[in-house]
Image (cartoon, rainbow, N blue to C red; front, side, top):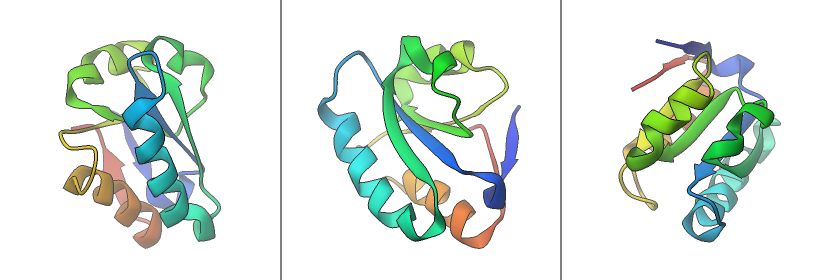
Length: 104
């Protein structure tokens, strides 16, 4: 299980299947919330996560196993809903409060 301190999170990558669709929506929403905390938020296909150099990977639950396989030492947070999911807000809270964040 990977863990990172919220104060050390500088790059969050929203993983997607292959395209942009819903992951871009999550990326934009998260970037807006984390902008004042100097956290970069991007998106990447799950098969390119190793190149993304993320402190945290955020992805839909259906991609979580593939994401963890691609970046086993990185915190992977899986969500169920693209909008309003508490797991997404958990990432925001970790950054804002500086608390630890771990894999699901």
